[in-house]
Structures are given as C-alpha cells and as structure tokens.
Length: 82
Image (cartoon, rainbow, N blue to C red; front, side, top):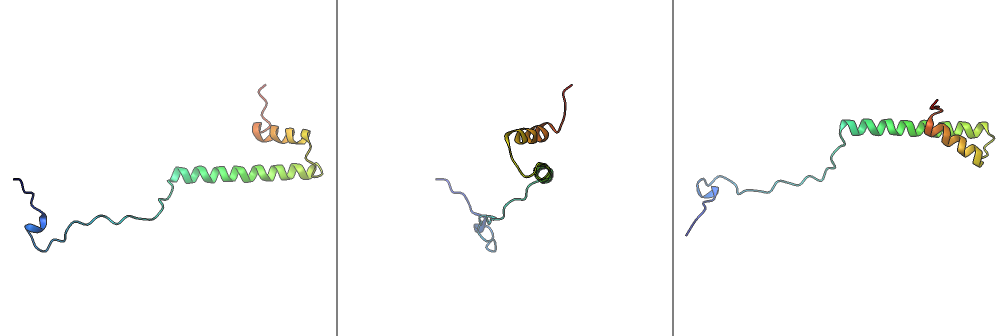
C-alpha cells in the first residue's frame, strides 16, 4: 500500500495548506485600453458639439437634407477623394 506524507507529519508548526483568498476586485483596464477609451470619448463629444452647432446654424430644424449633410461631415470629415 502506498502512503503519501503530508507536510504536517514532518513538522508540527506548519499550518495546513490553505486556498488563496479570491479577490473580488475588478481588474483595471490596461494603459492602451484607457487611452483608446479617452480618445473615443473625446471624438464623440466633439462630434456632438459639431452636430449641435450645425443644427443651431440651420435654425434647429432636422430635415433629410440636413441629416445627410451631418452624416457627410461626420463620416468623411469633409474629405474629398479627388
């Protein structure tokens, strides 16, 4: 018959093995994730300010043509492929 000795059988002052305490803390995002989030939020705030300013200039009317113009400005940033 086989017997496996426990560490407490060799030395009496060793406490039995304990499981590590599980940490409930949520891990913080890394540096690149925080940088990406900051850039994304900044661009989103800037786009919101641009839309508000454009609507203020158009008399706060949101028509189909104004919506197309806003999409054109936001998605292409006024960039022309030519």
